[in-house]
Image (cartoon, rainbow, N blue to C red):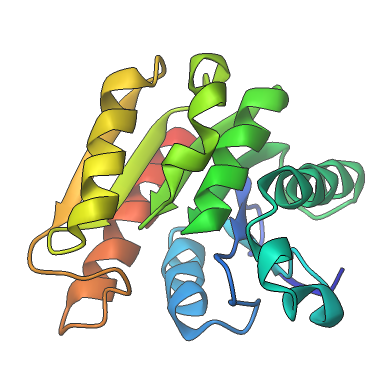
Length: 195
C-alpha cells in the first residue's frame, strides 16, 4: 500500500489516517489535519486503504471489513518498524474510514485514541462495545444525518467519548474556519491522549 510517513524527532506517538470513500493520501483536508497534528510533536501516516484499481469499484469503497483489515495491517507494520516514535498509535478516520478506525480499535490492543471526522460510525455499530480507546466524534452541524448517527454512537460507545459539533459545517467542512477547527480539536485530542 502507498503511504506517507512523517515523524518529528522524539514523537511520543503516531496518528494513522483512514481516508473516506473516494479519498487518498493526497487529500488536502487530511493533509491539513496531519500538519496540525505534527505541529503538536506527533507523527502521521497517511496511506491509501485501497489500490487504484480497487478504488474504481464503488462497492469496495464501502467494504468496511476490507478497509479495517488494511488499517490493522498498517498499524501492525508501523509497530514493527523503527519509526523513531514510541508505540503509541492513534487513528483518524473520515467518513467510511471512521468505521474502519473504530473496528480496528475494537480488534487491537493499545490504540491510544480515535478521532472520527464526519464519520459513518453506524457502519461499526456492532463493534462499539469492544472499543476501549478514547474517541472523539467531530461532525458538522449542518450534516444532519451524520450528526444523528454520531449522537447515537456517543450514547452507545462504552469508552471515553466526546462529540464536537462544528457549527454550520457540512460533511466536507469546506466553510471558512471549519477545517481549521477540526484540525485544532483533533490535534489537541491526540496530543492529550497519546502522551
